[in-house]
Image 1 (tube, helix red, strand yellow):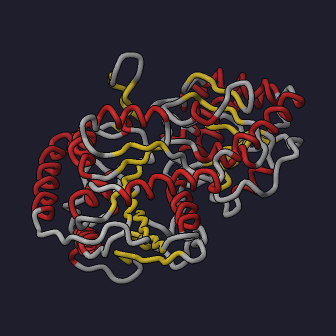
Image 2 (cartoon, rainbow, N blue to C red; image 1 turned 30 degrees about the horizontal axis):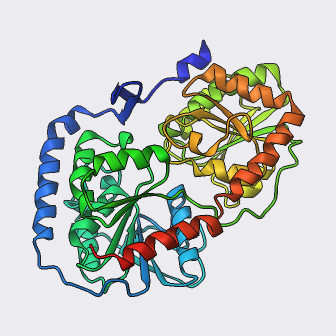
Image 3 (cartoon, rainbow, N blue to C red; image 1 turned 30 degrees about the vertical axis):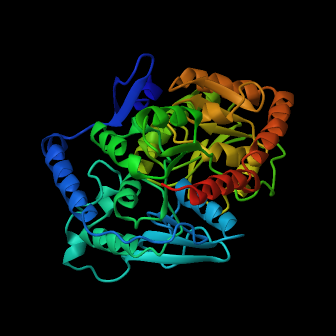
Amino acid sequence: MRRELFASHRHASVPSRPGTLRRVPKESLRRRLLGPLAVAVHRAALGLVARLPRRSVARGDGSVRILIGHAYGMGGTIRTAHTLAGYLAGGRRVELVSVLRRRDEPFFPFPPAVAVRTLDDRRGRRGLLDRLPSLLIHPDDYAYAWCSLRTDVALVRWLRSLPGGVLITTRPSFNLLAARCAPDGVVTVGQEHLHLESYRPRLVEEIRRGYRRLDAVAVLTSHEEHTYRALLAGAPTRVARIPNALATVDGPTSSLDAEVVAAAGRLNSQKGFDLLIAAFAIVAERRPRWRLRIYGSGPERGRLQLQINVLGLADRVSLEGRHPQLREAMAAASLFALSSRFEGFGMVLVEAMSAGLPVVSFDCPHGPADIISDGRDGLLVPAEDVDALAAALLELIDDPDRRRRYGAAALQTARAYAIAAIGLQWDALLTELTAAGR
C-alpha cells in the first residue's frame, strides 16, 4: 500500500491514436487561458522576423554549427552534441553554439578542435531585456521558461549573420527559428530528442507548419521516423533516423558481482524514479543485500527522498547526485534499470550497456525497444508496471549466469552506437544535403 501512494502519474493521459496514449504535462488554468494568446503573439513575432530581407550565401562551405541550449550544462542532449561536434571536427570546421551560459566551466569537457560560442551569457548583471519574456521561443517549448527577449535578439542576430555551411539545431523552437531566419544557402538540420507525442498540440501544429522549411529533420527512433514522415508528407524536408552516439565504447566494464542496481537521469516525473523505487521496495524485501543507486539531480529529489524514507529504504536506496564519471559508476553495479514514462531515445541505456550491464526497462514510448533485444541483452516489461519491473530485476538478480550472458551481449549492442559507426550516417546525410539544391 505504501509504495502505491508514490506510484502516481504527473501527466495527463488523453487519446492520441488507437492503442496508444498521448502523455503531455497538465496545463494550469493560467496556461489554458493565456496559452492561445501567447502562441498568437509568438507566431506574429516570428512572422515579422521572417519577413526581414534574407541574405543568400554559398551552399556548403565545409563548416558545421551546432546550436544547443546550454553547452556548459549536464544532460543527454548536451553530451551527444559534444560527441557529434568532436566527430565532425575530424574533417570540417565545427562550432558549438550555446544559447545560454550560466557557469564558468563546462560539465562535459569541450571536444578538441571545436570552437565554442555563447549567445546570451547569464553570468553577469541582468538588464531589462533579460526580464522580458521571449517572443520567438514557442510558449509550449520547455525552453520558453529560461529564454528572454535578450535571447531572441541574440539568436536572430547570429542566425542572420551565418556565412553558409550546415546548421544543426537541437530543440523545436531552435529548429523553427533556423527554418525562418537562416540565410538562403545554409543547410538546416533540425534534431528531435523527444517524441512528438510529448509536445502540447499547439507546438505540434507549429512543427507541422514550420519544419517544412528545413532541409532535414534528424530523429532518434523508428517510431519518430514514421511519425515525422507522416506529419511532413509532401514537404521537401528529408527525415533521417540517426541514433545518438557514444563518444567511446572503451572503458571499465562491470564484473557483475556487486549487489547493486544502478539508474541515472534527471530527477523529474518523466524518468519515473518513483516507479523504480516502488519496484525496488519489492526487490529489497526478497533480496535485502541488494542496493539501488540513482545518479542525477532535479526537481523531484525531495519527493523521492521522502518516498525512500517512508518505505524504509534509506539504507538500501541512495540518491547519488550528479556523477562526473557515470561510466565508472555504472561499472560498479551489476544491473541497470530504466523506469521512464517516456523517452526520446534512452541514451543512458547504451551507456550502461557499454559498461557491460544487462538492462531492465519499461517498454515506454519510444526508445527502449529500439535499443534492447528482449531476452538477449536485457528485459523489457510493460510500461509503468511496477510489479513487472520488480519481477524482471529479481530474475536477473537470481540468475548470475544469465546476467553474464546478457552483459556480454549488451557490450556488443553498445558497439553499434559508437560514434565511429553513427558518425558515418551523419557524414552521408550532410554530404547529400550539401550537394542537393533546396
